[in-house]
Image 1 (cartoon, rainbow, N blue to C red):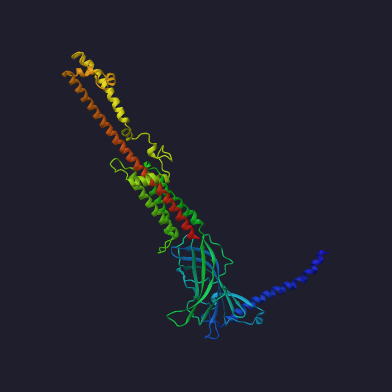
Image 2 (spheres, rainbow, N blue to C red):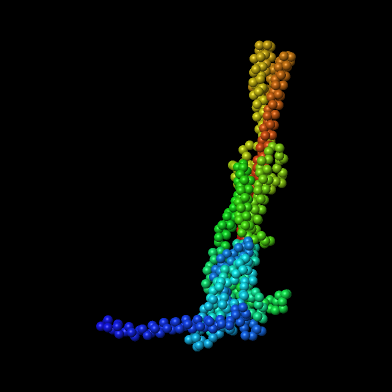
Length: 506
């Protein structure tokens, strides 16, 4: 049964297949006949209008597919576009009933007349136009020509706010040889079509509005219409923040730390020069990608300001190091500098020496001062005690010396008798009348004065050395306070410059 049923049904399907196949072949024959009839007396060289005094209307529609490249240095925008042009050809019409209801045919575009609409601000050397794709021809004479094109257009790039910049690039289309009285260009939509746009990694497209312009050139009195599409682009700045801005910001914060580095380390100037060279490398990287114009990019201004700050910090470091290494030949610290820098600024910036507390000045915390013994008389007391000790020892020697050479009555009783009688004893004063005793006593006083002069010379040398040390310590403290002062000043400058560039970006 299934076999017989299938055998009975198969013949019933064959007429339908034959009709369909015959219909397709019939349309192919009618399309070929239609093409031959249309092209019999047709010329693609002339503008297809019945009245030459009337303008031919061409509708233009641009679809942005992709932004391939934006060359800021050469100011060239490379874009991939789909260009649609629609016009009516008065000589390519037919009655569809005469051709088995055929309404649309597709033929090569070089067989029909095409408007010479070109990109006015073209920037490449290739003189070829859109691709020679087929055109869609309808029975009422309407021709639709869709063609892809990779265009390179000139674009005025403003890099004043790089990398937070917006660019506005124009794509101007119009007829190259026909004026507005011959070919009138109209907009298909109020803006470019972005429905098939492929996102770019660097640029974000924020719109593509269109406007029609009619320009009267000086050479001719006829109007020349054109359609200008303005492409609004916003740069994606994440790449530049992580690769150019943040490294510069971190490097610039190293410049104030050069003031915190100890002067005896010998690396203060080297740090400033190294930071300056690093910023120079980043500045060259930015300059290579930017066009040589009068407008300096925002990040370039930030680099220049940072490099100027680092240069100033290096110069100040050299000046402060010269103050730090003032030797004994330097003049004492002026009084105003002692009051302003050592007394006040050192407390504001918390600069203290080793062993010096916050609430105790250095003069009070010093264990020994050179002038104190001269004031309270301790040095004089020690000197008298040493003199009396010296008198006792020298008189003891004189006793033994005179006991062998002179009578035993010629002697000096020593410290005990001197202290008990308030001076030289009566017996000693009576026995000092002999010439030998007078000579020995005179020799003792002369020897004592020579030793005192030597002691005073040693004391004066020590006093001078101590004064030089105090003077050098004061200059070092002045340099340290200035280091701390400029460190905070430059930290504030770096912070303000960072806030400024962020506010400019917004």
